[in-house]
Image 1 (cartoon, one colour):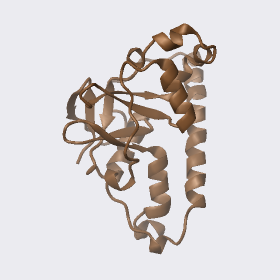
Image 2 (cartoon, helix red, strand yellow; image 1 turned 90 degrees about the vertical axis):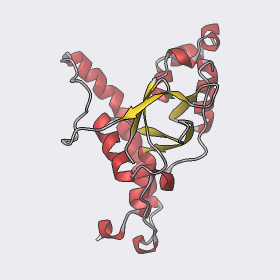
Image 3 (cartoon, helix red, strand yellow; image 1 turned 60 degrees about the vertical axis):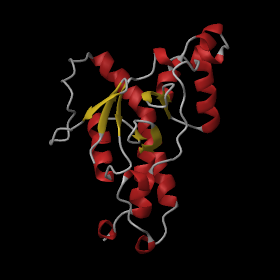
Image 4 (cartoon, helix red, strand yellow; image 1 turned 135 degrees about the vertical axis):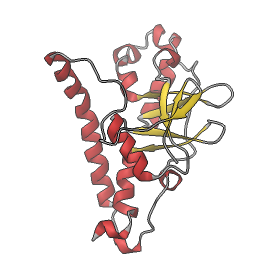
Length: 205
């Protein structure tokens, strides 16, 4: 089962390029200062990935006693916490800090996936949110959420999830049901934990 691209509630099949690079149009040439800013933005992401790997490694038992995980449904976090598009930035900020979430799917009134928001999206407004300004309560996440969302189904294979995350440089994929409602989420941490704890035996030899 392939990964699916959801755009404002409309879904279409997604196919990464066979060479592992992004399937989207090539990016414009960036200036040196832009490259430096991108490196700075990716540094926390890389640090969190390393931390997740270390935490997963600490939980490793005997690989021969583990059952292989094959599909998204085997490793996804479920049920998944969602927000409505009219949720304020302040509410989303408080929830993410309290629960330690890094990504939250956005569900429309009928429960279908409308977008996704990350902690990095909200960090751009951190000074505003910490200052308790009225704008943080009035502005909603609909204004800043990503509406083009790559998604998986419970039957999407794990190697496909990993391939898409690597190609698109994303760290989370919402899992949707046949009605396009978010029922779970798979993150890079989930895949790393799977590799360490539930990988097929031949990967450990």
